[in-house]
Length: 201
Image (cartoon, rainbow, N blue to C red):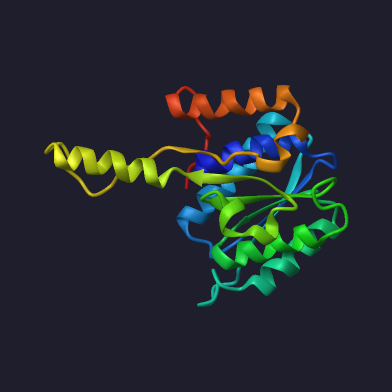
């Protein structure tokens, strides 16, 4: 989670024009915190002038299923100058993404970043602003574990899989080549273990 958040945040740090970012998150639990801390560290590494706001859903049973709250928090962050919003928290985060997609300047001066999988496919209502998604590469990880288990090499129940970013889709031509190459280098560095996010909980 911290690596996916860091990569997405690094991209956001290079793309922001206002130097203000926002995060709209689900419940404050370790996996969500790791996404958040990564998305805080990544932009700072790319652009020390960046500031951000981070909001977690209040501890209620709908923390990951409150799109109305997510939308309201995204709007609040944009009203305060944030031009890129990271939504990480199930339907709560999806509400944030969709709010950005409805905003004036969506896809031109305001952008959003999804989480977990490529949300271009899972939240089509966000496509107008969705630059990428911070992904846990679950399919690859499950495949690797299945092959290991089949070969008798699987000894535990925990695996730290890889992380990455979803394709840029319609925004591919709008992202400068130098930004793409810098982000690609960061993601490859994390994958190789040569770049650490600095995130600890």
